[in-house]
Image (cartoon, rainbow, N blue to C red):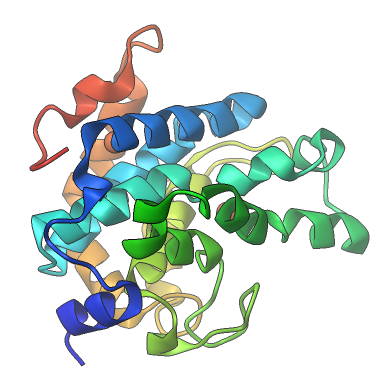
Length: 234
Ligand SMILES: [Fe+2]
Ligand SMILES: [Fe+2]
């Protein structure tokens, strides 16, 4: 199955979908920033995931509209963390088994949060949020989906999410260099990640690195919307 076919089949995308609406995009950015604001260690994480996901989608030759939908899902991927108790989300150390169970509910909570928004349901954004922690080998959560059963947008976000997270320092671990993060992504092709998404990442790794650099060089006092002056419909 082609990537176009996989994505269209998974999310019933149409070129005239409402998701490209700027207002919806801006709300998605705002919600993403609200999540990141809960945790001082995840500054701009949702923004990075949105931008890198869009670049990966285009590298996989998805249409600009499809890439924009995945971009919006990138902003919203962790919105369910709003429903995770701060004591778990902000814990400065390893989580207990019970705390992991709470943390692992965030994709389901996120899907529930966006469910009332019809265009997010119809474009597949809800499914991308729900499945962004699935693994290509079927060992992820919440549903243990495997391979092409995972929506392509979710497989793309999984790679963008990991690269962004590894470059950010967290209370319980150090950040690592881009070169090491890149190696980690390559080493997990076919296990955690879709090999074709990993290949696309490798093809555009330099621009991914620059995108993340630009994101963090931005003045935190300015709205992030200016980062999106260039891409297609957004
Ligand atoms: Fe955006
Ligand atoms: Fe997540």
